[in-house]
Length: 357
Image 1 (cartoon, rainbow, N blue to C red):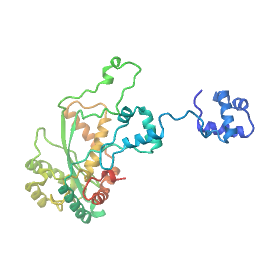
Image 2 (cartoon, rainbow, N blue to C red):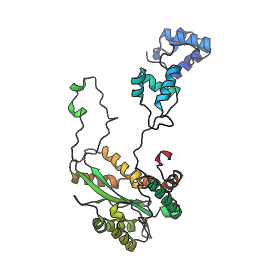
Image 3 (cartoon, rainbow, N blue to C red):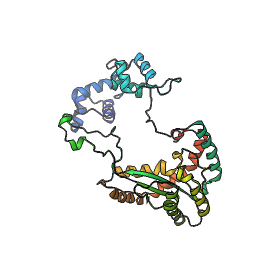
Image 4 (tube, one colour):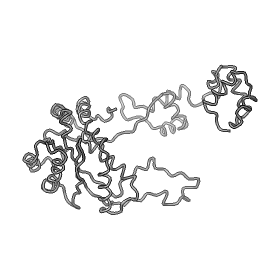
């Protein structure tokens, strides 16, 4: 017989309160296949406690692992000490050092300590000087880019995509009743070339739409000359097509972007742009392409079937994914730019993504 659900127990409680015994309840619901002994136990519980769900205080097997001492020991190990950051232990390490089973450790953490688990987030290294620049420039951009003007900003970035991107196998498991050596290799092994074919793309997005996906020539080095001659004119064409009445061009602090050649070209060929002295350094957390678009594309690429095998096939797949990106999430990402500026300011130019709700 399957374990009784809470709904079943409440139904049995109602019937018991109406005066029915275990045999009568079993006869009333033959399709449930309830055990007579189980029904008798629940009826006695209702008689003694008034509830079929709540147990009588002190009933059940005494706790052997989740004792006060063990709970205190786990609490000491699971969280970092105030004067020793990043000294927390994993549930596996705690189980190994205390002799408590990992399952009991997890129960203590979730049930007794009511702790939540969060993944660590990779972030840029920020020096004190970088934080100060981020703080100062975020304040200036927040004053300059109003909600209305944000909708005219064209955010740009470059990104490398691999035919065989790195795979996180932590949650990619194969379940089998067989031994590991007996499992088909195609199910168990993930092949990845040591030097995977890849392409680099350059693109831009704004509140009103997305530009084209521009592919950097194979083996080309994105220096100031290549950026100005081969990429910037195409990106500006996208801007003019999406926002013919004017736009603000954005780019990050890559050397090719901040070169005198690129800055002068933008000064002569755009109605407005964010200068190298205005964009916060080390700030992928402020660019919608970095914190939303590239991740969304990679997620779709990982689910794409069949996978491309060459760089040419990869370009075709990326264009297909790019053109199918929904506009509503892009608009939301653009509009959160001001919120991210505000949060960065609250963090005094430091890391802030963990503060976003």
